[in-house]
Length: 364
Ligand code: IPM
Ligand code: MG
Image (cartoon, rainbow, N blue to C red; front, side, top):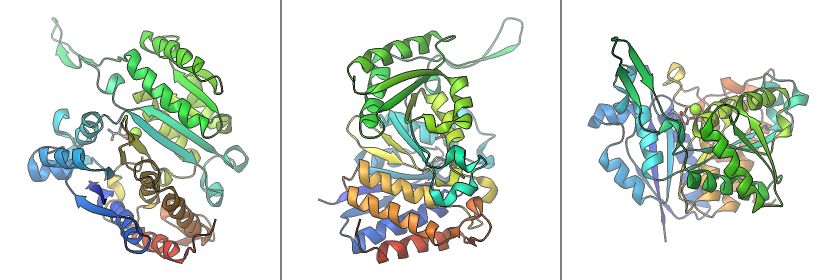
């Protein structure tokens, strides 16, 4: 039976990069037997402009039906003056929570071809392969109460709530342990247990779940130290598991180790492996519409979709090989440009990946 994929281009560079990723999906459909139907809908600022809300009912309904979702990015200066409840970001957060996408996988892999593009010394980052598992539907992003209130003296006070239930911590820990079991066998749980009760509980639950997985080496680190270790000696990490907000911050940091945030895909999965796939970089309004954005993170997100939601591991390998091929060929968008490479724009990069896919004989 044909699988239904919902395409949500969003804002800023979203439509440009998603366009290239859709070319890749279409190539797999037309030439490699991938049985998919593609649908498209509005989210974020684009949806607010057209329908008055960043996550219209129609989009949410399609998202609930879809086997997988590919999202570009949301947000931009145009919508910053809006009230927080209708800002583009709410479209993304609404999708995550409405669909129960609690497990966010953010791999940070350094492609050897890009070792020079990192701001860190090659010996610090070469061979880097970290998986950040970020809790995505809880914590301070969603905790109640929240808001801005007026005190008796007329001063205003902003407040948010960091809250995690044991069951929420348990399920994300299990995901982290399972993933670690398929790779390096090590999990580092990141918290701030020295200050925050909520993450003291986080650590306690981590230790409990760890006991069910004696084959996994579990360690714990405070988030401030983890940020430092990520830039000091990032190769010490295999899987990192952490809260929603810490994961947001650490994953941007980890992305930069790999040369460019324009290279990193992500998967956001529910209990059953249904998922939403998106580059982690955001809408980059400063370069939107110029045709220079790097589409590789979005194309690599398609690879993650093939692997995690569509059960097409072999096609996922093909897409990743095609990306490596264009890097081997020396093609670079401006964000990963290095001396001697060939500078290309968004579309040329997408076309090159498609060509590499078509030329790949499929040998391993
Ligand atoms: C991310 C982004 C989002 C987040 C924003 C756009 C709401 O930064 O996916 O990392 O904070 O989760
Ligand atoms: Mg972020």
